[in-house]
Image (tube, rainbow, N blue to C red):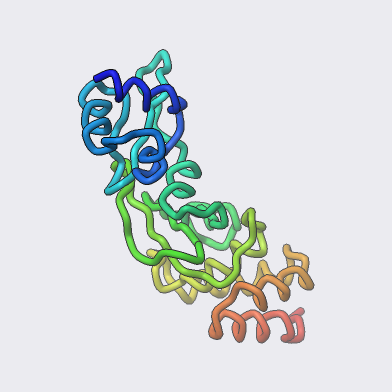
Length: 196
């Protein structure tokens, strides 16, 4: 039991750890992990991923999504995004989605971490933070996954693209982040002569 206390000295509340990180501080990592989980110090989030919860007045605080994903990927180059972000663009999307998309360069697929579901998608490039232009391009990339009428949303996107967005920045976002179909849509929408 003493040995697991030795491992515990290295842990910080609110941190997510991979098994191999913890193995540096233990000669019998699996036994010590088991002891630390049974005494409530650590919580298992997924295979090989553990969390040392921080105590708050409301109980144990769950891990931050960024901590969780960074530990899972062993990389801090990713972008967390919810399709709910599209709703603030004013193009007619109003649905609420209970999912978090993770654009990254390492993993692809749906993974449950700490009881939460994440949709990991491999992307060659994405911004550090989602700009309005990126979100508009991303919405068109993912149009087939939305619940709203595609035609209506596209009509709104076309209208807003030329009236409410910085056109050079939007063209750049479409070029950098759009799939082939999305790039064509924005090229047509932004180069078309304005009606009126």
